[in-house]
Length: 441
Image 1: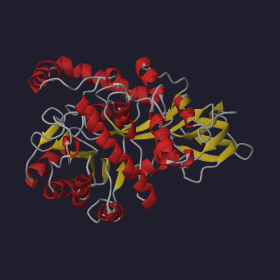
Image 2 (image 1 turned 90 degrees about the horizontal axis):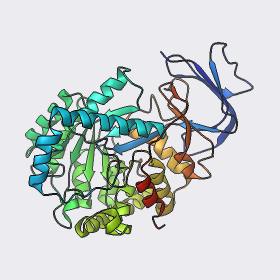
Image 3 (image 1 turned 180 degrees about the horizontal axis):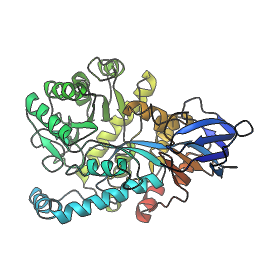
Image 4 (image 1 turned 135 degrees about the horizontal axis):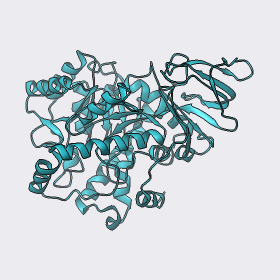
């Protein structure tokens, strides 16, 4: 049980594309952490036992939803050029030990809380070590600590030697091996399945490998059938057009990152009979690739190969964003937080990037990061908008994000499931902020 709150006199921004600021709004939140009433402050009577918080001259809106994060790292620059033998040694003798796992869990918890204090009340974690994400989610749900709403996937599913393998992925090389890996993740309590249909930038060994096709349609289909029969969604890491085609034909529910589309791909996004809800959504991660392209490699710490792979992926991904907008394809927001120069507290930068590079309005990106993300992730019955009966997941700002999206970088109050964080404290990485603030337009 939480305290009952009355947030009075706020200017409410609802999560919808038809954004209109509603001044002098009161939101009543009951002891169960749910929104009880929403209305004009001069029309709602506040019960005597409700704690009143006056939001005069401030803006209240739904909490942010990040649909693509990894909690194992914090976004500081790092080199991915270590040899495979070095990585194997570090994995076996450091990470995969009781001490290493304890440190990993502490870091993941710290990153999740940092995101929450920055206004991210819901996160979808799409690939972690040792099911530590499942353990964190369970602790939050058991009220051992106040954290964001977590949707977790555990290990990737990949092919032998594929993206994320062997350390971050379960490997399988046939439809039945793929089904077995789904069942293993399900046994560990995941909320969704994350698969790697193509190679990725971080572990590619040559230019072009990031989008190289790895899974077959038959393997993707088997995974989706196995997940969908128990109501779990499937998220697919894909960084080439052919990879997108294979993933869509197999029935995935979200394409992570994405690539340029043709008519067949566009049609499958909008009408996908094998997807759980009959369509597939796109979750680009523009900020994860952009800095590696435009920064001096001395600053970004990436090799020429990583830089070129990032450029290829980014250019195709940005084209897919424009095509999604033009063709009415459902599109959400994810950052790939944990990747170099992508922290857990700067979700607003991804929104700003959509506005600058794809011409989207502040109203549109705010809808994407709240209402639309909630629908894509299947949690729209409980979060994503400020409506009666939904969980009190919200943020309070001193400036209007519809006028300046960077207002989201300074959250003055956070509430998650009715739990109040009155003075959010974000632990920033000064080096990363300085670099990102200097990026060219």
